[in-house]
Length: 75
Image (tube, one colour):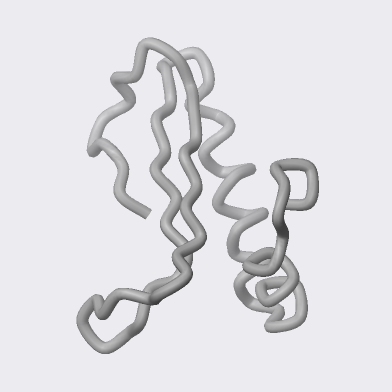
């Protein structure tokens, strides 16, 4: 999850890519890329987002379903 080291975005946003062909990243093959930008007023959302992400990637069934989703609503 590439992100800024400081809270400096003018608007909070996420960009999500589910790659058809994983790319090597160290010891792992990466298939999901999430870019995150958070504005100062929304910095409390970081904990909520990372708690959600931890919950999803820790469950292989949920993570597989996430990777197979075809729409934003499905994601």
